[in-house]
Amino acid sequence: MSKAKKIEDCAFAWCARRERPDWSASDQAELDAWLAESTEHRVAMLRMEYGWQRVDRLAALRASSLRQKVPIISQRLPDARGPWLSMAAGFLLVLGLGSLGLSQWMDGGTQRYVTVVGGHETVPLRDGSHVELNTDTRLRASVDEKARTVWLDKGEAYFEVAHDPKRPFVVYAGDRRVVVLGTHFLVRRDGDRIEVIVAEGRVRVEAVDAGKALKPAIITPGNMVVSESGSMLVASTSLEKVESELAWRRGYLVFDKTSLASVAEQFNRYNDKKVVINDPATSDTRISGSFEANNVDAFARLLQRAYGLSVTDDKEHLLIASPD
Image 1 (cartoon, helix red, strand yellow):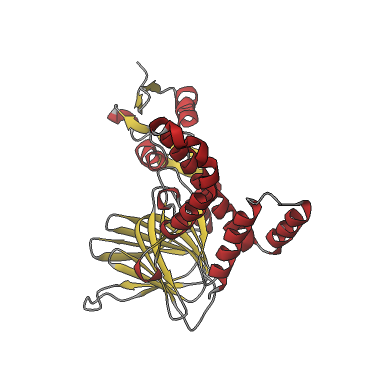
Image 2 (cartoon, one colour):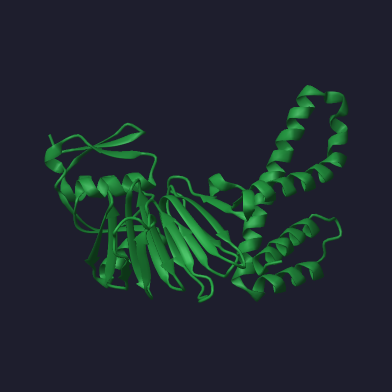
């Protein structure tokens, strides 16, 4: 059994044990000591507690529904709730809570991770690596004793890869493959457009189709790869640019004389309320600064106060135009 699986099992056991009526202060002290041993223990417990809470709510809804339909047997539900809770907890552990960023088990031990618009989730992998998922991201991971493989189906993810020369860490994104032994890097996929930025170490970016005569690119901090429509460009970038690209990890978007059209596109990745520029004359307005990614309303107020632009809020959109 892998270390990660053992930790998950321990977290599950702690959650189940804490439900018992004889839970004591000494039990709590023992749990606190286990949590203090490592970050992996704390992350596993938080994830398990969240799933446990979801099961608890499902049990309550189920009980409420049964009370409405069969009032005669509703008094027996509290006694039956314990076994059902255990079965439902096990069921959720198998299926996961993918829509909320938690893992979902699939065939062959592959795990699926999903974040919603505005979501942000960090998940540990079985080899000790960590993946941080940005907004609206779909990712699959298969990590075992033989191989470490990830598929980025959509969105953006930051990888902190545990060094293992015997098992290269491979990320598939569209028609590109990123191969590393151990490093920190970012991959973003928007359709067939792929971007790779290295924060630490180096990675190799190559075509998935070996038949294509595309030379692999080795990139290090200060370089980035942009791939689109079968072409691949290696470009230089500053460390400041890398930090700006990674600002979402702190919940921020950073712009430096960026057009309002591009800024609106970025905010729309993180918010259900979309920024719409009704007046093309305002699209090229240059924006600089650091903004909370999920606070599009505050950004709209800044456009009114600092740039004198007109902003109309119809609850679903923020309509931006030149002042009347």
